Each structure stands twice: as C-alpha cells, then as structure tokens.
Amino acid sequence: MTEENVYQVADWKGQSGERWVTYQARLDAMMAAFGQAAIEAAAPATGERVLDVGCGAGASSLDLAARVGAGGHVLGVDISEPLIVSARARAPQDTPALFQVADASSTELPEGAFDILFSRFGVMFFDDPTAAFAHMLRALKPGARVAFVCWRGMAENDWVRLPLGAMKGILPPTAPPDPEAPGPFSFGDQGRVARILTAAGFTDVAIAPFDASIPFGKGETRDAALDDAVKMTLEVGPLARALADQPDDIRARASAAVRAAFAGCPGERSVMIDGAAWIVTARNPAS
Ligand SMILES: C[S@@+](CC[C@H](N)C(=O)[O-])C[C@H]1O[C@@H](n2cnc3c(N)ncnc32)[C@H](O)[C@@H]1O
Image (cartoon, protein in one colour):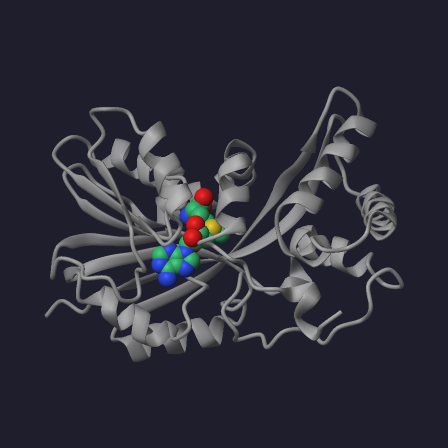
C-alpha cells in the first residue's frame, strides 16, 4: 500500500463525482444544516446575483435561487460533469439558477457581476487557494459578500475521525496528509483561511465555528441504521477511497470495525455523528 492510500484525494472529475451523484439525496440531508447556516450568513436578498462555487448537484444553488427570486440569478460552477448534469436535471424550469462545468479557479467569469460568492464545502480543493480566490474576487461587485462553509480539522470531525481511527491494525499506518494540501480539511486552520482571503484581496474576514450532528445512517431499527451508516462510510469519502482496491476480507474487517466505532454515537433509528465546520464571511472592498 502506498503512503497516500488512507488519505487519497477526491477525484471529482471521475469516481468521487459519480459517487456523489449516486448518493446525492443522502449527502444533501447530511450537509443541510451546514448549508443553511452558510446561506443565513450570506443573507441573499431578492434580485441579487450569486456565484455558487463547487455547487455539486446544486442543492444550495437552488435554495439560493429561491431566495433571490426571478429577478435574481445564481450561477453554479463545478468541475464535475456528472454533478452538473444532475443539478440541471433537478432544477425547476423557472429557476433563475444556471449550472456550468468549470474550474472556478481559472474559468472566465463575468467581471464585477455577483453580489455574493457562496460555497457549501466546495472551496477547499484548489491547488493555489489564494490565486483562486483572487480570480473569483474579480467576478464580484464592489462591496460584494462572501459566505462559505468548510470543515474544521479532521480531529474535530467524528464522521471521519472515528472510521479512520478504526482502521488501526486493518490498514497499514500512513502519515497524515499535509494539512494544507487540497482536500476536505485544508481550511481547518482558521488562521490560514484568513490569510488566504486577505492575500486574495478580501476584507472584513470573519470565521465562526458551526457544529451540527450529521444524520449518517437511518433505518427502521438502530441496527439497520448502523448498517446504513457503515455502508455510507464505505461508499463515499476518505475511507471509501482507502478501501476501494482492498480484498473482501479487509473490507469485511473494516466494516465491522467502523460499525463498532459508530455504536457509541447517539440516535434511535439513526446514527448521528458530530461534524465541525467554519462559517466564513468576507467582503470585496467597496472600491
Ligand atoms: C464536497 S463537494 C460539495 C458539493 C456541493 N457544494 C454540495 O454541498 O453538495 C465539493 C465540490 O467541489 C467541486 N470542486 C472541486 N474543485 C473545484 C474547482 N476547482 N472548481 C469548481 N468546483 C470544484 C467538486 O467537484 C465537488 O462537487
């Protein structure tokens, strides 16, 4: 096994994107509270224009579109074609949201066009985040707002800490990834996030913790919910990638270990697992 196996980067243009399409409804339910908190921080008003970065299958874009109304506009951009296809398919005909396959860090965006730069967990994957945010800033109107939600560190997020911790003795130990390398936890250090946004040209940066319990598994009984949570963990996310090429016996041991690790999480017909995020707001200087 190579070093990066437990922490393989998400392949958004390929399998990771396809898995997210398959589990879109589940993932939307899991991230709903975080997305709503970011939308409240963005405070979209009727008629405003919003850029949703890494929009995925479009749940947040469509919520934002409902908030800005017919006189407003939402542009959802994502590098994953299957996710954009899925977003377009679920969009009501009269929505003011448009979806585009594009790398937000480099694609040509209309200059000075948006009132809000928004993202639900879609801005942690840039190779050069400062350059990416500087690029996106040019698409904003003077005084425009930024609001996004990103994960805090892996150690604070039980939905990944518990299953990866349970792999001790099953998968060979690997060095943790560079905390600044592109990936879900690369914005875990709030000082780094503030430095990136400030260096990119943003002002009024504010970063607040937001915690929520994530519905990881659901079922008619607690046992069924635990099975469901384990299935989800083995299908999507860091452990799914780590186990992708493993033989059946390793997968079976991993599955049992994850089940034991989740057994202490609360929930009756569910498995609720702690998630820890930052809600980040900032502003394009007025002129
Ligand atoms: C964790 S998912 C979140 C998706 C969506 N915002 C949601 O909450 O359902 C991260 C998304 O960011 C997208 N992404 C990663 N890098 C990107 C980039 N450079 N430009 C645009 N989208 C990107 C991925 O394809 C993926 O859909």
